[in-house]
Length: 411
View 1: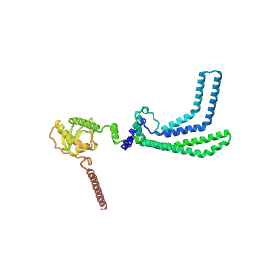
View 2: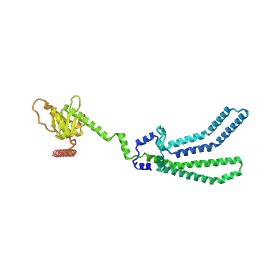
View 3: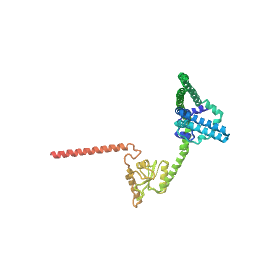
View 4: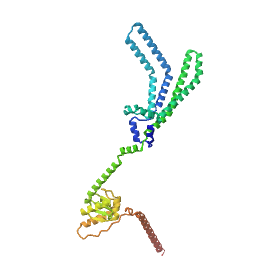
């Protein structure tokens, strides 16, 4: 009852990690009915088709054993000789039935690994004292698995009992007719009848196995199902605690921000929005092919970048479009995008002019190519319309020039 109550909470399909762990623990679907059916059928086939050879061998070693025993009793009571003769008789018997046992063993192994696959797990060999608990055993008895085992037992009785009764009534007249025949022919006919009956009864076990295989698979899948808490715990173990991961990411961002702020005093210029955005640029001639983005930020971080620039006497210039474009499209410690080279070159030219002696030039914000300013949502459309207008003007001019040329030619 308790097992069924617990299974009601398990509504999630088992994860691959849970299935792999269960396999390591030796928990795989197994069908004893399939293994038993294959083993019994293989042994029955071995007896049915090799029975004559088995009987002949058995008669030979039994006759030899009796003759040897009679000689020993008649001549001398040698206990060692009697024991040796007994061992020899047992050895001959085992050799005679070895094909039957081998066929049954191989078929049983095939049936065992047919459903769950080959599995070698030392954990499955460890003793489980929970199975000795009578309350646990009672719970299993009245669980859905216990009801399934009861259903299999009833099915086995019905199938095998029905086949046995059918074979008995079907061949009863033929067996009774053997009484009127000669002894050798009657024994041969009886052997053939029994061989047929054994094969039919052994084949009937596959009906039980066909019902047991999906049942065992369903029971295993149901047992492996997970609750929501188990799924969350597994995700924590495999991917890490989300809170811990969040703290780690926060620490990483703080360290990256600290390194970024440490590089601001080495910048050549800081561009602002003027208040919401700030980016720091540096160009090292001969070391890099283009300026690099040392730092970028918005709001509080942007204010801190401006403070550091003021403390270290770095030029702070207002260029809203370029600042937004660099913040959106630029990557830290990487060279700026190629499309922004011309705009940044104008900024650096102004900065270098400030360093040179002489009167300073008034600063004017630079524009960026259409589509690069994140706030200019219609820039691409305007650029496309401007291109169309330019193409129209060029076409009209070409048409006018052609008309003028045609008029001059006619004159």
